[in-house]
Amino acid sequence: MAAVDIDVPVETEPQIYNQEDMERQAEGFKEQGNAFYSKKDYSEAFNYYTKAIDASPKNASYYGNRAATLMMLCRFREALEDSQQAVRLDDCFMKGHLREGKCHLSLGNAMAASRCFQKVLELEPSNREAQQENKNATTLLEFERMAEFSFEKRDFRKVVYCMDRALALASACHRFKILKAECLALLGRYPEAQSVASDILRMDSTNADALYVRGLCLYYEDCIDKAVQFFVQALRMAPDHEKARLACRNAKALKAKKEEGNQAFKNCNYEAAYQLYTEALAIDPNNIKTNAKLYCNRATAGAKLKKLNQAIEDCSSAIKLDDTYIKAYLRRAQCYMDTEQYEEAVRDYEKVYQTEKTSDHKHLLKTAQMELKKSKRKDYYKVLGVGKNATEDEIKKAYRKRALMHHPDRHSAATPEVQKEEEKKFKEVGEAFTVLSDPKKKMRYDNGHDLEDDCGFDGRDFDANNIFRAFFGGHGGGFTFDSSPDSGPGNVFFQFG
Image 1: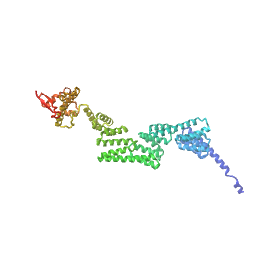
Image 2: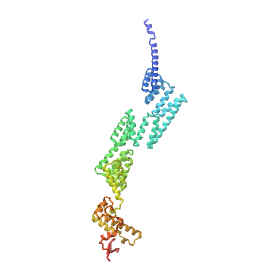
Image 3: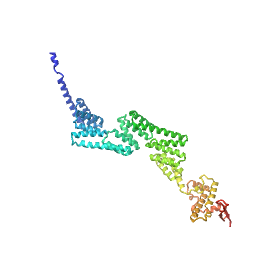
Image 4: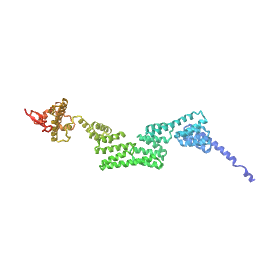
């Protein structure tokens, strides 16, 4: 009897009963999940759909519902897995294919998304949502192609434009975000680039591409040591990351070459410093801030070597790369001063003073303005052919030479035009001597003051002949220039009446 009892299939009926009970329970969890989904409480909806799946793991619709919830929570990778599981369980589950396609699209997988939407259209040819999403996938592919072409052409603005449009369709695509961030860095928009990279690193701290972009921003902001740390970390996560390897190599080379140049300059080896800065500039044309500093450094070395025009060009190159670089404006202004290009110097000093209103910058501006004012007057030193530090005797000798050279009697046989020009020069020589031979007038002239203010000097009423006669004896008689073969040029003797 006992054996007969054992043969009774006592386990079969309870097992069927438990499976049905679990399915009913799963359906209840699904309904609760639906209720929370309707209230937009997606976290609770997710919990109940998960309970439904645990109770009945072979039901495709439960995975589909949880996928929809995960999509609302922007957890597209997990949603993709649930969508794929749903269609594995039921290949005719149209919503499952549609959701899988949407997840692929959000993650930037346009080709995979298109295949899913095509499957939906096979199941339901008139499905408008699938038709539209398939068009979106095609559009996404086009933006990808445009971005790739533009990146090769180094049209980084166009790449950013394409990625913005692409991300409107594929908001969860890290690849698009990284490409946009890299191009923002290459355009010098470092805060924007860093923000994008940091957002990705918050979600995935091991993302080698995001680490590379963070390093790139620091590198381009001339924080080379910190940049190298990020490049090394990126290579640790992805040893074959070619961009990180190249950037790391450039960063180290640029730092080393710049430091060599600085050391050569400190050692007063300006030729070597100039050459080292030149070599450093060839390492990475994209590094705007560092290259701006290198141009300015080379300009400083060039100025020491008296290569003033090249120094001005280097400063201009630095300013073109970074128009906020005060040192480059100051260096260029000094070079303009040294080459007597005072208007340009004033313009640069004005720019500096507008940016940084310091007493030093104000003094530099005033000095340049004074030199500009002085430059617009007659340069009496040039008229006499002497330096600004000429002695009283040098000024007298220069006057004697120039006065004899330009005296009208010496050019009496010349054309009227030549006579007029020489007469003008003769008068200027007299003016120059009158001013530079008078200590008070000379001091005011050197300081840039107007001589008419309180010295009583008026060049318009000036008589150069009076000065000439006074200088050469003041006898009141006539004089002629001896042009005989035995006499040297410019010899003069006086004939008294």
